[in-house]
Image 1 (tube, rainbow, N blue to C red):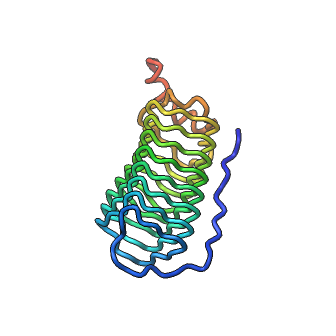
Image 2: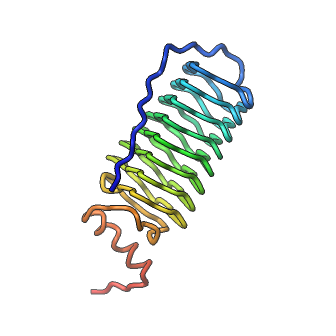
Image 3: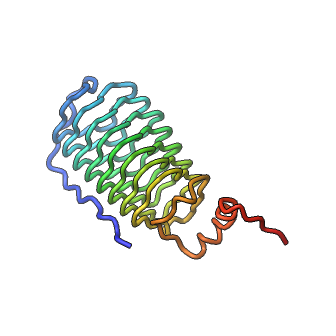
Length: 215
């Protein structure tokens, strides 16, 4: 089992964001967004390099195909944030409160998601490489058709996850404090779980195999 490589983000001195709305295909380099209401804005295709987003509102924010590189997002919150097709590389996402976030077809590489709670995270057809979920709560995350390589779940709760048609390589689920899989249990080849988790998943595995347990 190969462990995930974690991001090592070292931000330079940052310039405060000057205001105004995000721009599609905008270029933000060394910028700090602090307590900004970015709800409903369109930053599709924008590039965020060496940036910090702290306590920002992202309700319905359009960030499709945006690129977040060597950046830190702390305490961001929002419902329906659109990050479909986005690239996150060397990124730390800490204490987020998000719901219905769209990361469909996104690429995540060396990403640490630490603390917070994310409901209905859509990672269908996404590619995750060297990603760590640590101390967070994931409610009904959708990994359908995604490719996961060197992904770790550490001290986090994973509830009703969907791994339908996913491909897993060196995925470590042993550290998940809570592990619930709603569908796609047949796609867990390439993952490692603990003996206790195997017992918890026994009913799902039995159902997948068509086994009837009686007595």
